[in-house]
Image (cartoon, rainbow, N blue to C red; front, top):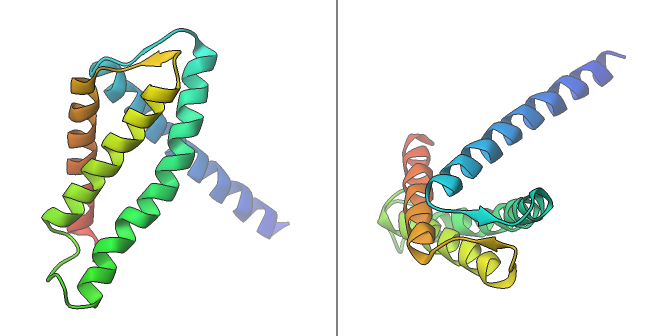
Length: 129
């Protein structure tokens, strides 16, 4: 029974963190001009975004670390990491916007979101040991 309580607490904590991140990203996207036709299209947008973002983040974080371990770059926390995060966010939001006709965001909005997303990720990586 103790294990079930621990698992329930852990899942609740992860769910709360996940919801906070989604709300923050939604607010940021609305700030840079995200428009949508219905709430269901917005949910579909975020489902696709979260699913693909997790996969791309794993790849985006692995590339600089592998280059650092191979001795090609000195640090996995520098400009290359920022550029990868920026490009991945730009491509992800741009692709979803292109294929999902019920959600719209301007190219300038995509660039601003990708810049902010890249900067946040870069700052978080700086503190990571």
